[in-house]
Length: 485
Ligand code: ATP
Image (cartoon, rainbow, N blue to C red):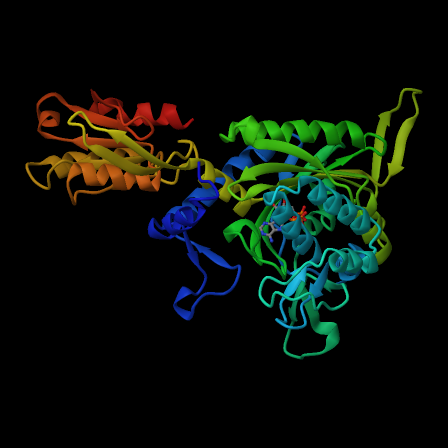
């Protein structure tokens, strides 16, 4: 797995092998915006498809939608984002650098820890949590002053007051630049689900409890955007809102907590690299919230959020739209009385696709060294991406460009490409081609050689073990299909 020391190598590897490029790189890039290359786009799609299938196909009470990025501006008034979607920030007057207050203090606490002052670091973090929970900005400023926290650039303590900055991007809708034409780029996909609650419930004749899932782009004007694709200004979320009876939220909250952790394990994340972190400060809409954290190369960080959102969102949209948003439940309670009309409660699961991508690549990235039989050292960089989500499943490699070997290889390619992603290559020595496939993360390579012409067998090579074995040409497709199931 990638660690703190080789994280820069992982980033370089992503670029070299067509996974991730900086956006508009020829113009020196755009901060915290990234493009996915030919392998990255396929891996991202495979992760998204895996999530989509587990949510919609494997749960008969969850359906998927695809709402627009632009939404009526009142949506964001109702959801609370116009008034509340902000982070406390502070500026250094000498460097003009802006910091998220929690990041500035956390960074300082990390330095104390590294210097052996664990207790002080703990005290500072506890004070910060308590002050953030009370929105006590003067107290946060005092904490920064008392600890003489310095700006990394100017090295001074010359700070402004702590202020709130809204993270939503806005743009003009239509031809005229009037205030009422301002629309926002959605900062979360969830609201597209809430405003469609009645549409989906009625047209799908959905019965509570049921869920609506969605994947799509979200945009946040993150002030401190760093750590590669961990914190981006344009990113993708995979969210599911589960609509339930009021009062049953803790039961479902615990259900989805366990379910989502299991799901992350099913995609190859070891359990010891996952942990729950309860929120100290609850968002304005939540009565319980937890993060599933992953141990990234730069420390434990949020991968997914699970939030019990109460009936806040639906009630707010009802109030702002003046349309009744309720559900009629004709099931009977334990006293034999129908539950009747109510505003459903919601438990949300929200995972960042890009963060999940980074999780999978961090785990997959391995620099391996070993001694060959002749005593010399050999090495490789390999991406051990689980076969079921790897961008390319099978590389088909004729040993030579002649003697009819490419024809056999092409035939195998034509047979397999309907079922899974294949890659064909006939250039370079076979060892070099294997290394390249290791670096891209292709789990299986098949080599067609002269023996193939004699007995219809091929060499299959397994990426993770580098073991090679001879199998029947006719069995290759079935063999790969079984491994990627
Ligand atoms: P953080 O505390 O890291 O800013 P958050 O609590 O604001 O995250 P949520 O609003 O709960 O995040 O969003 C749900 C998920 O969306 C997160 O768990 C994360 O995976 C993803 N996400 C949020 N912001 C970003 C971002 N700027 N870049 C990439 N992914 C993001």
